[in-house]
Amino acid sequence: MGVLKVWDPVLGVYVEVGGPGPTGPAGPAGPAGGTYHHVQALAATTWTVDHMLGRHPNVSVLDSAGSQVEVAVFHTSLNQVVLTLSYAVSGTADCA
Image (tube, rainbow, N blue to C red; front, side, top):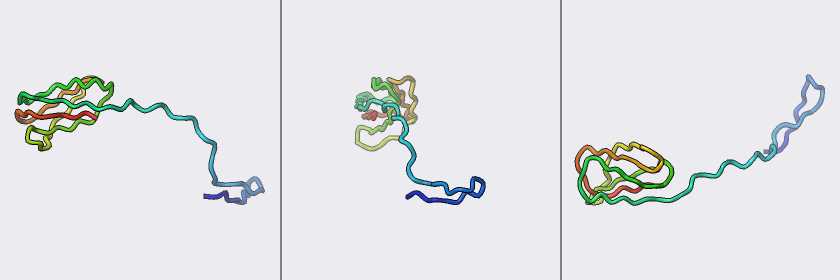
Protein backbone atom coordinates (compact mmCIF):
# COMPACT_ATOMS: atom_id res chain seq x y z
CA MET A 1 0.00 0.00 0.00
CA GLY A 2 1.36 3.41 -0.94
CA VAL A 3 1.20 6.67 0.95
CA LEU A 4 -2.07 8.61 0.57
CA LYS A 5 -2.45 12.34 1.23
CA VAL A 6 -5.73 13.22 2.95
CA TRP A 7 -7.06 16.70 3.77
CA ASP A 8 -7.42 17.24 7.55
CA PRO A 9 -10.01 20.01 8.00
CA VAL A 10 -9.13 20.48 11.68
CA LEU A 11 -5.44 21.10 10.96
CA GLY A 12 -6.12 22.69 7.58
CA VAL A 13 -3.35 20.68 5.92
CA TYR A 14 -2.84 17.49 3.95
CA VAL A 15 -1.54 14.60 6.08
CA GLU A 16 0.10 11.43 4.84
CA VAL A 17 -1.75 8.22 5.66
CA GLY A 18 -0.54 4.65 5.16
CA GLY A 19 2.86 3.41 4.19
CA PRO A 20 5.20 1.41 6.36
CA GLY A 21 5.91 2.36 9.93
CA PRO A 22 9.21 2.02 11.74
CA THR A 23 10.66 -1.44 12.27
CA GLY A 24 9.89 -2.83 15.72
CA PRO A 25 12.30 -4.62 18.02
CA ALA A 26 13.21 -8.25 17.39
CA GLY A 27 11.09 -10.79 19.25
CA PRO A 28 12.43 -13.32 21.74
CA ALA A 29 14.11 -16.49 20.52
CA GLY A 30 11.79 -19.45 19.98
CA PRO A 31 12.01 -22.68 21.97
CA ALA A 32 14.71 -25.17 21.19
CA GLY A 33 13.68 -27.82 18.72
CA GLY A 34 14.09 -31.50 19.11
CA THR A 35 11.99 -34.62 19.27
CA TYR A 36 11.79 -37.69 21.47
CA HIS A 37 10.70 -41.23 20.51
CA HIS A 38 9.33 -43.36 23.37
CA VAL A 39 8.83 -47.13 23.14
CA GLN A 40 6.25 -48.68 25.47
CA ALA A 41 7.07 -52.41 25.30
CA LEU A 42 4.59 -53.55 27.96
CA ALA A 43 0.89 -52.89 27.37
CA ALA A 44 -0.44 -50.39 29.92
CA THR A 45 -3.24 -47.85 30.35
CA THR A 46 -0.83 -45.20 31.69
CA TRP A 47 2.47 -44.32 30.05
CA THR A 48 4.98 -41.98 31.70
CA VAL A 49 7.28 -40.39 29.13
CA ASP A 50 10.42 -38.56 30.29
CA HIS A 51 11.25 -36.64 27.09
CA MET A 52 13.64 -34.01 28.56
CA LEU A 53 12.73 -31.44 25.85
CA GLY A 54 12.27 -28.58 28.31
CA ARG A 55 8.82 -27.69 26.94
CA HIS A 56 5.30 -29.08 26.46
CA PRO A 57 5.56 -30.96 23.15
CA ASN A 58 2.81 -32.27 20.89
CA VAL A 59 2.42 -36.02 21.36
CA SER A 60 1.25 -38.67 18.92
CA VAL A 61 0.77 -42.31 19.89
CA LEU A 62 0.76 -45.44 17.73
CA ASP A 63 -0.10 -48.92 18.96
CA SER A 64 2.14 -51.90 18.19
CA ALA A 65 0.20 -52.47 14.92
CA GLY A 66 0.98 -48.90 13.79
CA SER A 67 -2.53 -47.50 14.28
CA GLN A 68 -3.03 -44.09 15.85
CA VAL A 69 -4.39 -44.23 19.40
CA GLU A 70 -6.44 -41.55 21.15
CA VAL A 71 -4.94 -40.60 24.51
CA ALA A 72 -5.37 -38.05 27.27
CA VAL A 73 -2.18 -36.01 27.58
CA PHE A 74 -1.08 -34.53 30.92
CA HIS A 75 2.10 -32.43 30.95
CA THR A 76 3.36 -32.94 34.49
CA SER A 77 6.47 -30.79 33.88
CA LEU A 78 8.48 -29.29 31.04
CA ASN A 79 10.29 -32.65 30.75
CA GLN A 80 7.60 -35.25 31.41
CA VAL A 81 4.20 -36.19 30.03
CA VAL A 82 1.75 -38.81 31.31
CA LEU A 83 -0.48 -40.47 28.72
CA THR A 84 -3.73 -42.13 29.74
CA LEU A 85 -5.34 -44.67 27.41
CA SER A 86 -8.79 -46.28 27.66
CA TYR A 87 -7.33 -49.78 27.33
CA ALA A 88 -3.92 -51.38 27.81
CA VAL A 89 -1.73 -50.77 24.76
CA SER A 90 1.92 -51.20 23.81
CA GLY A 91 3.46 -49.05 21.09
CA THR A 92 5.26 -45.77 20.61
CA ALA A 93 4.83 -42.10 21.50
CA ASP A 94 6.51 -39.34 19.53
CA CYS A 95 7.05 -35.97 21.19
CA ALA A 96 7.73 -33.04 18.89
